[in-house]
View 1 (cartoon, rainbow, N blue to C red):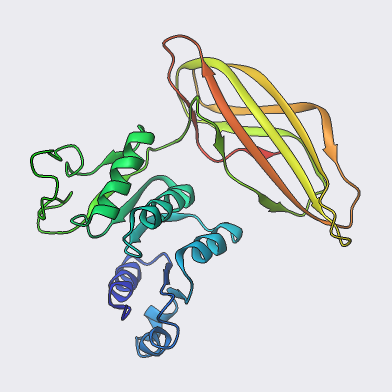
View 2 (view 1 turned 90 degrees about the vertical axis):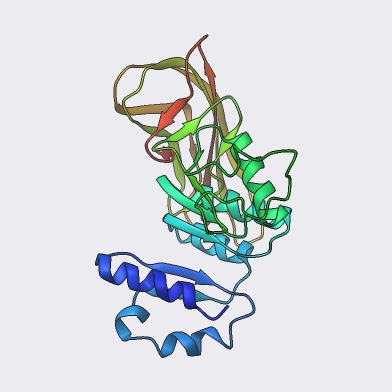
Length: 271
């Protein structure tokens, strides 16, 4: 609201000697830039301010391929908005990163955290606000991951999990008119099964047409160490040059009986 938390984060990054803080306030476009201009130059250089709502903010970061280590969510506290902010934070977060949901005493952020953890079993809470939530005290004003705060603190797994649910990284801009296969970077693990994929290449042409090519298939994986998997499509996806392009890779994992989810080090990339 008055960029105070952003200043604390910028000072921490300055002391660390690395990092950038991205902060947004859709109602602070007239107020916050003037406040930030009064900070020391060293802090201003580490700060990127946006007068955007969270949907536009996360969309901008996603299009710029920004990845995040730490996210503080303190926006619209309604459940639907808080859940969107949490899900988009998770999408842009690096493995092992942290999301802090403020105002755990309010129903929206707390319920969003509950819902997210129930549907993302590889994530964990750093604390026990969600796990210790009691039906006999559903509106406990002291619930928090860290005592004397109003935070629910969530940590991503140290890898990107791909399970039986469909997993997509959305459309990614690319300058290439070619999409010949997918590349996977795997950490050390022991699992086996079938990896199903759907890959799309879209062309945004000057005449308004948006043709797309699609490849759907599966590959057998038996993993017992780290490594790179390169899988070419049966037929490459190729357009003529001269348009704007996006690719999209969707995955689903069909594990063998008793085997865990497939772990990725990074999002899948095109060949």
